[in-house]
Length: 238
Image (cartoon, rainbow, N blue to C red; front, side):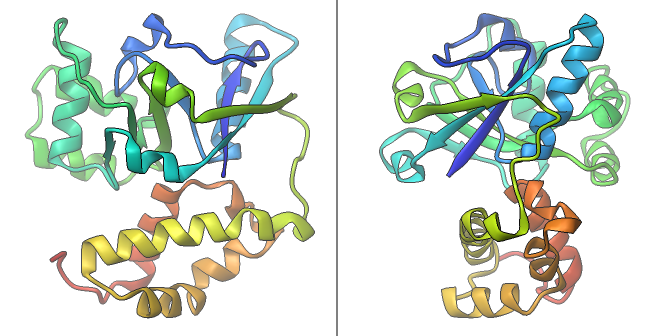
């Protein structure tokens, strides 16, 4: 699967950046499965720095590597996710030993809610409810050198370049469907067959299979949340 990192430079050799401590999951190297989010991020960096050049760096990642690494996955914003994020942001001595963390990232629109959380202005449930009204990005943190070994540089390109046409969607769709199947199985104990049947007959899959909708840009967290909104009849998690 391909992962993306927006930057003002070409990053052929990712490193564990101490400056990334300010982000949700701590220091490391951040990437996303969403090309759209990577594009937005690098365009934001270019605007802030008044830069004329920026790059979306592309990496190949074998997801099977996660089986042998210490990984933490947040499928959606919940109490555990919020506590982890706030501990990292507010506790100077907070650290963790995960190799890879996958989960929601707070964009500019939702950032204010985290500021409120740091000030303990709202109750946790209220904060999470407010965050659900925003579109949250998804991101991977590669936190350790051995995690970075599983990330192979592919190429870099400007954020204005389109990397996908309708004929290329078959390269993106299976990976995203596989994530959705695993999420449905873990949360609702659906079989692989039932999960695939629901996904392939969903409106979300139609959008994902059509280039003009740009849904192929979205990461697994965004897609999963929209899928749950469409279904609406799965009941409570097991």
